[in-house]
Image 1 (cartoon, rainbow, N blue to C red):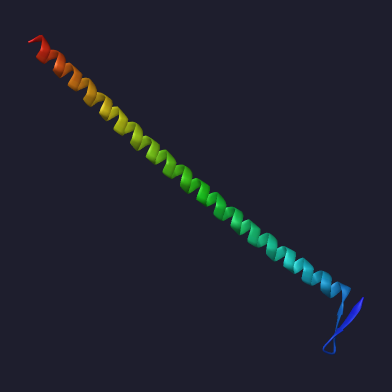
Image 2 (image 1 turned 180 degrees about the vertical axis):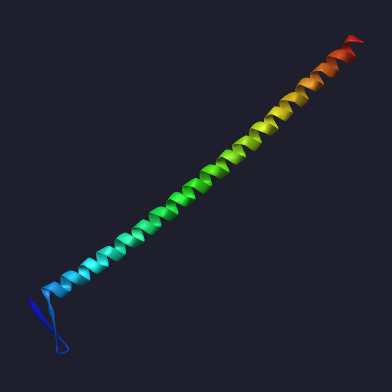
Length: 79
């Protein structure tokens, strides 16, 4: 198929080349997007793990404080 456009002609081969170039660019953009999503997942996972560790430490400290307070109360009552 040949189509006239402002005095120029485009062949099927030219259209196919243009479509191939468009597909290649779309694939490149999708790959970049996938990489960006993967980096975001890694970031979020790392942040979640840090926050989980911090919470675990705070809970452990609170548990120790409660245990210490309980022992102090026992001592005071025993005296």
